Length: 105
Image (cartoon, rainbow, N blue to C red; front, side):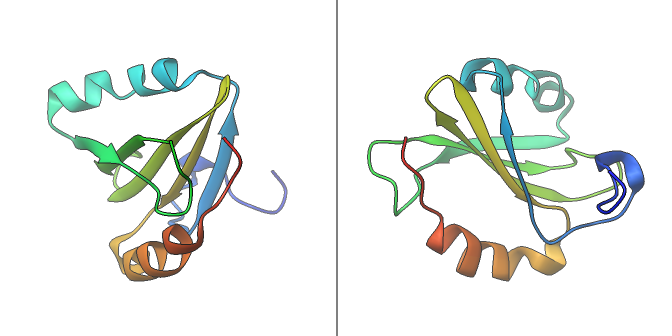
């Protein structure tokens, strides 16, 4: 916390990665109200370097005032969230980060 500003700081970062203790289903429930309000769109996402895993691509205003692009993926009884907080970083996020993302499910 003393080095990287928190999620509510208003600072847009090129990359954030988080492993959540929530299951994938519980993690996706947190976006239900945003989907209903129309602030985010959710679509299926299959990482090219991880076989047998299907997650979700969440795009929109996840954090107030920011246009986020987030990948949510199941990891056994946990969830991986990888995201960028600005469209300025989207090309590198898709072309470098997601293109090289690997993990053992």
